[in-house]
Length: 207
Image (cartoon, rainbow, N blue to C red; front, side, top):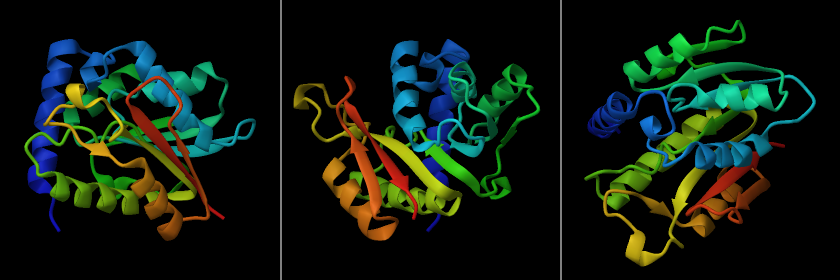
C-alpha cells in the first residue's frame, strides 16, 4: 500500500514547523527541550550501555538525538533518516562528525543494532484513525527489519485526558501495541508509561 499522500502531508507539516521555529524542539513539534530529552531517555533504554553500537534514527529531524547520546557518553555509529529534505539539510549542517550520516531515501538505510522512532506516529492530521493505524503497523515492520538487536518507538497514549485530546493527533492504545509487538516480534517487550508526558514508549528487544 502506498502512503505517499500521508507522507506528503506530514512532510509539509514539519517543514512548516522548522521554518517557524528553526532547529529547536519546537521545530520538530515538541513543546520544550526538556520534554524532548525525556523522550530520548526512554528510547535510549533500548541501547546496551557501555558497549559501542550502531543506531538508526527513523524520523531524525535535525539530529537532536546525537547530542543526547554524546552527552551521556555513548559510543555509537549513527544514521538518521527523515522524509523532510529541509530537516536533513539542517541536520547535516549541525552534525559533521565522522560517526554520523543522514539520508532522505529510506531505501538507503541499512540494518543497525538498534532503531528508534520518536514522535513520527503522532501527527495524523486529516487521515482517518484506522488508516493511520495501518500506516503505523507498516512502519513497525520497517523498524523491525532495520534492527538486529532491538527497536523502540513512542506514541501518544489513549489514556490522555479526553478534554485535551486533539482530533489531528493519533493516540495509541499501549495494551494493543504491547500485545502486537509481543506476538509478532519478540518475547522481550517493555512498555514504559510512568513518565510525566501523555505518551508511552515501547522497547522491543530481540532474542
